[in-house]
Image (cartoon, rainbow, N blue to C red; front, side, top):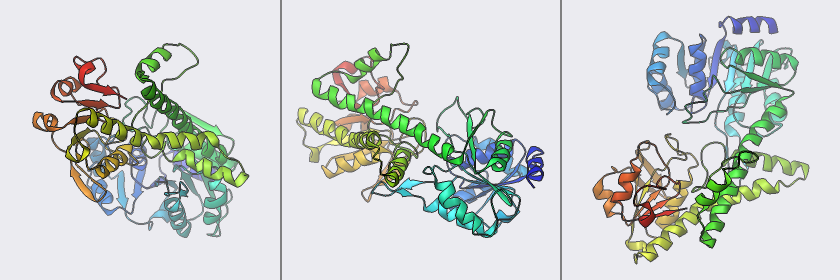
Length: 435
């Protein structure tokens, strides 16, 4: 059975299903279709399914012409249910994972998808989990659900965890050239998993167990969270001491060894850094272990929107303008530059804080046409003279590449720059506050 499945995979005859065709699943589905596989996406989002089946892109990193071509070729399609799962040879789970308000893992989508797959599971299938999960979940939760079908792993089906490494907006590292970790539930699963991912990714990194694969993903994003928190804490302290944190970091990063560049900002966002470290923090309690550094880093990063809001209020006070009579134009609301993703964006929290103070908020973002914050609908306005000049403060929250920052410095009355986008520009020293 193992050899038969591997042969299907290597001949590109295996039928593939990607469960969840969002920011992770759609780029993966496209890469699989490009190398010759027939791919069926499964997603409960009706609008997303309709767009995919019409070759319409909804993810910033995806080439719509390429997507449309694959759909017309019949290589890629999507459905809203799991009815075709039994006909598939490889099933990849790419559904979102998040946190509750109490920072407890919310794994309902992974569990729901696994239960639906178990109902259709047949002999000879490979199940791969790409969604971020806590170390041990594949063994403790996913496997028992799948085996409730009456089939047994390694004898009847294969199970792997291969954590996604998508970096939205990255033009250098793509699905194809980013090293891919694969952990199998046992040896045969690992062998089949490596054979599968080798079809579309240049370098595969087999690891000793699914737990190692699960833990590696958490470590990657915890590393970033902790180091960003350190930069943010330096920003908080430098503000109190009247020192430019950017001058400090520029000086420190000239060292050619023993240091890596991380920068402060208005907080962290996206589907990884604000979420993944807390999966480990939560799981560690089962072993009576408190992960102190992870918790502190999360606290610092979550505090940054409040810090930025206090800078805004302080600046308004220096201008002699009360918050209730002020106008603040926020430039950029996505969690990182040049993407259309505002999941977990700290800018949303920042807007909420300023609205509570009575500040009139408008925003510009070329990637997001409208948002709803505190039951208030806001629409992106044009970044034009009249809107920029009418604002008491222009707050640069996301430094999209398409923005003319020199023009913004020349036009705005006052700027608060959380991304170092205006540093060194002509006139910035007189009207820009860098934080």
